[in-house]
Each structure stands twice: as C-alpha cells, then as structure tokens.
Image 1: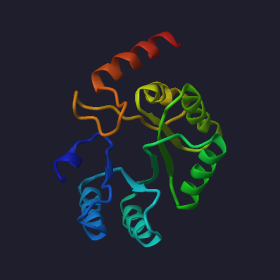
Image 2: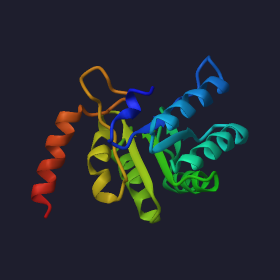
Image 3: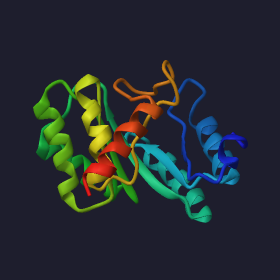
Image 4: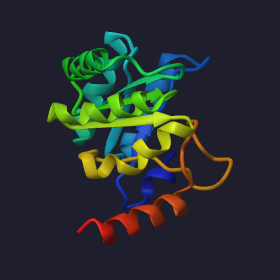
Length: 177
C-alpha cells in the first residue's frame, strides 16, 4: 500500500468490502491515507458507522471523499440517478461517483445527463456500450475517469486500456478546440 501511494500523482484509495471485514477495510484505507492518498472512495452501501469512521480519518489528511454507487446489472432511470447523486452528497461526498451497467444507448445518455446536476460527479458506464461515457466524462465535467493499465487488468467491464484511452483523449483534445 505504501508503494502505491508514494507517487506524486493524486491517487484514490478504495477497499471494497470483502470477507476480511470492515475493520480490515478501515485499516487498509488508513494505511493508504497515511501513505499519501488524495481521495478515498467509500461504497454507497457502507454503514453510517463505517462511512463516518473513514470520513473522519480522511478529513485529518485533507482527503477528498468519493461516495460510489455501483450497479452491475442495469442503469437506473434518470430520476433515480439524480436521487442517487443527491444521496451521495447527503452521505458527505465531495464527489459522487455512479457506475452502472449500460445495456442500451439510452442508458448511456441517462448516465451522461447526470452531469447536468452542476455538482462534482463522475458517471461511468460499464460494458461495451458504456465505453463512450468513460471517454467523454472529462469534457462533461468529471474530475477523473478510469482506464486499465493493461489488457486483463480492468477493474470493471468496459474499462479501456490506458494507452488507447490516452490516444483517444489526445485526439479529442486536439480537435475539439
């Protein structure tokens, strides 16, 4: 953990719940913040107690809080997406992150419409039809997007390889001015 967060590039600490439990999750996140994480990503479904413990520690380091909602099956309706974003901020997010499975182009459009809320949001689609949301996110106001370092290292379906994402974004940067 210390090696990962030793770089000067702002990094996000996240530790998804697993069989090791909440105490181990909190311990790992604290180690990451101690080592220099600039953001801490907390699951939308985390308990109030767990979320508050992480937020309290993070604030001591000036870490930004990301509350993340994931839906690996579908994309909720636009109204539901806005309610989810509102809930993220009620749960004390500095940035709301919504990642959903995109099954239709309408899902992608709804997900991208979340940027109209004029708050710090990252809305990312998973799956083949979600790739466009990952590419266009920074132009719509996202603080960041996600890419895989290499083939086979994606952390979500539809994640684009970093080098390919950089090529596409550089191309867009040059041609959208």
